[in-house]
Image: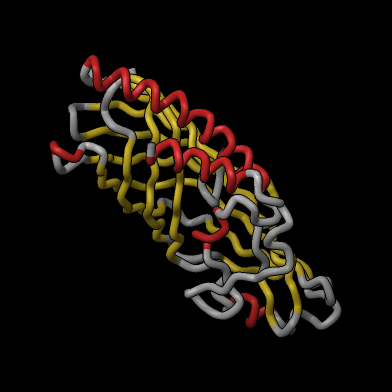
Length: 255
């Protein structure tokens, strides 16, 4: 029953009006004017319709998963050697392939990205709402280890990501344009995961963690009418930190 209620709640969130959060800005713990990355996953954030579609699909998938889980309880779980899945995070869509070495340890390869698009939350400094756009592509390799045999739904994950994230910040008043690009590789990842067991059939998973980077490389693309006078303020606002918190939800199949 609890699973069914959670599924209904996910579907309800996905159907909330897309303009519910229009005009609202979020603050970041990393500095003034920044953005709380975890909150950008909220399904009704303006500019994030892909999250809404994913939540609708997830609520429907959950119904199928509940039936499969009930059948598995009757038959007993069968171990899987491989797994494939898709995921979504505040950063990107992704596809993943897993090789399960045993009941507790897996190697996972993830490939993902996002075409250039507006960030769901913007940067505001001195009353000016800057337009922020970004695009990224990456490939990552992770070891997932389940330290407790009696709690195989819990995972510890560590690995690295190779890729690039290119961001553009535009002052709508002066037309000054700046770039903040993450291009240094590799970037380390550490986190914890829930779900995605080493069993055959449909799987659900959720991961919480962070990417450790060297921070973005800032540059001036166009100085604008005031000669890029606000460049230092924009670069020091903390909108693009060195530590990138990440939340992702995945659905997959073990075989």
